[in-house]
Amino acid sequence: MKQYIGTKIVQAEPANRFWFENGEKMVVPDSEDTPNRVREATAGEKGYKVVYPPDGYESWSPKDVFEAAYRETTSMSFGLAIEAAKMGKKIARKGWNGKGMFLFLATDIEFHTEADLSCVSDLEGDLTLPAFVMKTADDHFCVGWLASQTDMLADDWKIVE
Image 1 (tube, rainbow, N blue to C red):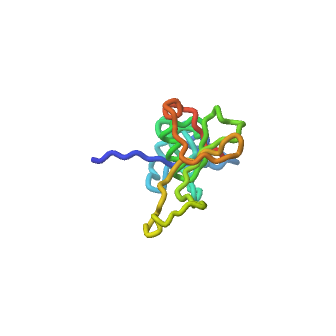
Image 2 (cartoon, one colour):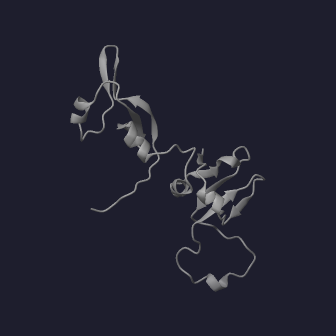
Image 3 (cartoon, one colour):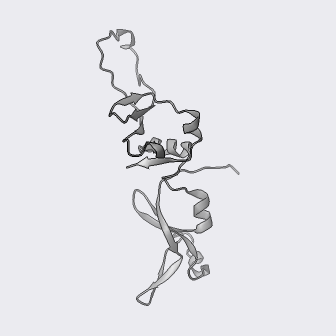
């Protein structure tokens, strides 16, 4: 059997498996594929209500399963931060907070120059490769930002809204 690793950004909150509202039993299902799991659940079983983008599909996950698969987006590793950037998110280190600094992944860079670029006029396709761009504290953009070893080993990366 092959191995897989997944990366998604979801919204979640701690939630009991089921509860009662106005005398009616309310259940957060695992999925439509496992209806028997609901009957096996114990009252107050700890877990997470999970909401999946983009359609808002709701599910429930046992506490240990959820916490083994997900981390809050305020304390990510560099690898998870890179995956978030690939999804179009802006990312930053915790220590950058308040200075307005963040990174984003640029997939297309347009050149405006007075230089003679006729040597590349007959090339087809993309002329640039994706690169990280940093918005600096003084509102400039640094194209081709490189991570230090400290950045790569840090677990304080977050998504910037």
